[in-house]
Amino acid sequence: QVQLVESGGGVVQPGRSLRLSCAASGFTFSSFGMHWVRQAPGKGLEWVALISYDGSNEFYGDSVRGRFTVSRDNSKNTLYLQMNSLTTDDTALYFCARGSRELDHWGQGTLVTVSS
Amino acid sequence: EIVMTQSPATLSVSLGERATLSCRAGQSVSSNLAWYQQKPGQAPRLLIYGSSARATGIPARFSGGGSGTEFTLTISSLQSEDFAVYYCQQYNSWPLTFGGGTRVEIK
Image 1 (tube, chains in turn yellow, green):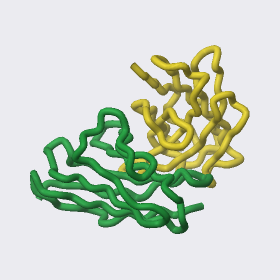
Image 2: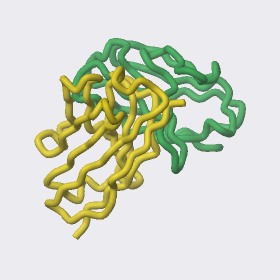
Image 3: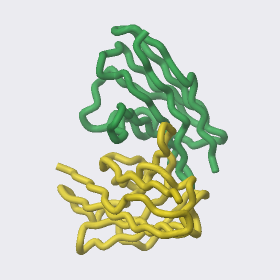
Image 4: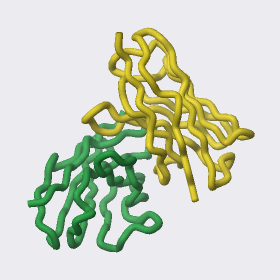
């Protein structure tokens, strides 16, 4: 069955960087676009980024464009999110999800806390 | 960016009753709209895509409709496991955007 497992979250100071990973299994990873979506504590869902199945196209939400970079390694079935210049507004549970447009499978998320 | 507005913010419904949730797009998204269910402590789950197509394994009591700027999610007869937060999401244009959610609670 499809499994997505995020890792790499933690507590980080404002202005610093963090890289999240999402390990995929149970499907042909290289055939699917992949997303990052975040959810601040007690808030709704915010779409962060998409990378196409082959990594040739990337799209970003307005609040992270220029600071975050999505990438993938299809040989390792792994999705990444490099987050730079973090602010307290980036504190959230970060989910990875499969899909090109609609998101049909989600991981359980990894928590990122930006605090001094 | 296309703003998605959901109403009501909270819907109180009795078991077995019908629930109708609304989602409005700031501009036309054609039928490029999905609905998700999220229970406390869990990841969201895809319910509906293409405005009206049920995702794999989703019960028939869930139905979606609409196109352009006005969409609805209907749960025909609320079961105990349906009490959750529901989000709409447009995928007609970048960036993808979610609505603020509707919480369905027990009346």
